[in-house]
Length: 103
Image (spheres, rainbow, N blue to C red):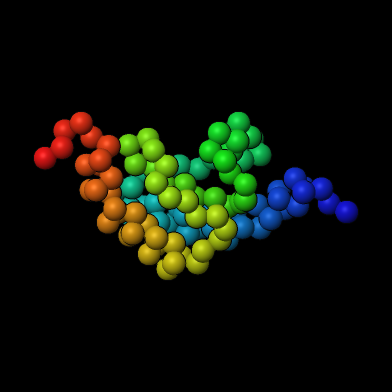
């Protein structure tokens, strides 16, 4: 019988294998529009804990240092791309709310 942590690690490896090619491709496609970063949850449990990561994969979206949204679980590339476009459409409003220099 697998422990919950072990089962989570196995699921992480399976989903990471499916997500990483899409993640890498989209990070190139959105260069200059969105910043992408990868964190290994097993190697950096303090970061996972700090941001409340409870399932893998987890994608977190930030604006002005504040969490804006998250996706937990694997999404096919077209669905993930749609979510990224949604984040971009919210970007100006978020920056306006985060900035001391409002127009």
